[in-house]
Image (cartoon, rainbow, N blue to C red; front, side, top):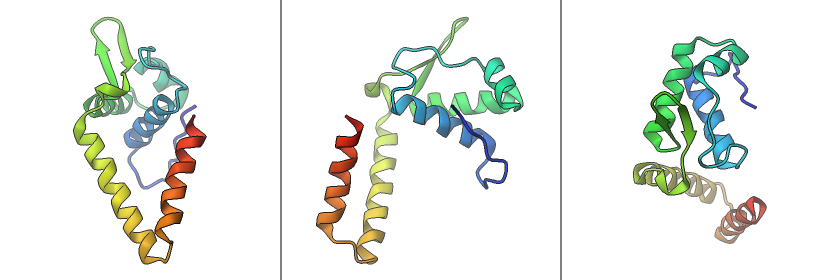
Amino acid sequence: MIEVDFRDARPIYEQVRDGLRRLIITGVIEAGEKLPSVRSLSASLAINPNTIQKAMDALEQEGYAYSVPGRGSFAALPTDVGEGRRRELLKRLSAAAQELRFLGVPEEELIEAVRKREEDDR
């Protein structure tokens, strides 16, 4: 499910956050579904619970999850993800497209890559 690479330069909490986000985005964890508890995720990944909690907090700040006191954390609906996150992703997409254009990738190929990715997700 979630893999942590201790040789990765990114902090562990970011790897856990990104892994959970990927599971939510791909539908492995559906909107409204309960996320693994901090304790169970900590035990299964052999990571400090505080690190897992930091990842969960970051996921909530991005809008991909929400907490219900006494019940745990749940995957949010796509409409709950913040506008700031959308702007950030569009900015990253724009930067990647700009670099690909610099490397000689034709605009049509970029557009086709986005369309193909969208079709693959259906």
